[in-house]
Length: 187
Image 1 (cartoon, rainbow, N blue to C red):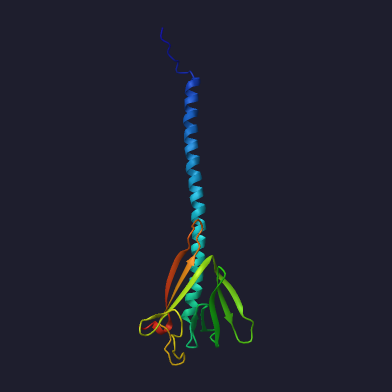
Image 2 (cartoon, rainbow, N blue to C red; image 1 turned 60 degrees about the vertical axis):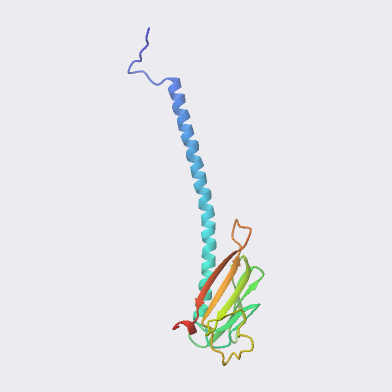
């Protein structure tokens, strides 16, 4: 005797259980994909914020160096110092960039005011500056050994290498930027 289902009959219990099992598998797979996307987004956002911090620090340095004056420029193991035009165009200020522990700092010295120290970038392990002279030689110290700073022409370019700690990375990563100085603009 064959049993046929009437068109008005509902779903059997087995059909309901199979459909629930299929939906459960799809739900678990969707949740796993969503979790992976969420974790990837968090890591990417953290890296993008770090990259933005690094870019901001280099932007400040590049802007300061673009306004460098012919006043005495000094570069040694402690960092670089130079004169820069003031924002209002009236005179100049003395700027210094140095590594303070693991923070790259900028110090602004103005006549008649206390020095202002700014933290530019945290997580910096090492800073290396080099300046390019008119003969296209790089110097880790400025003025070059034995040179008279008043008679020696200003540097054409500056190279800055930062060894930076990155999230989820054991070893510091070097980041290097080459900045053309005003004396090197027409060359």
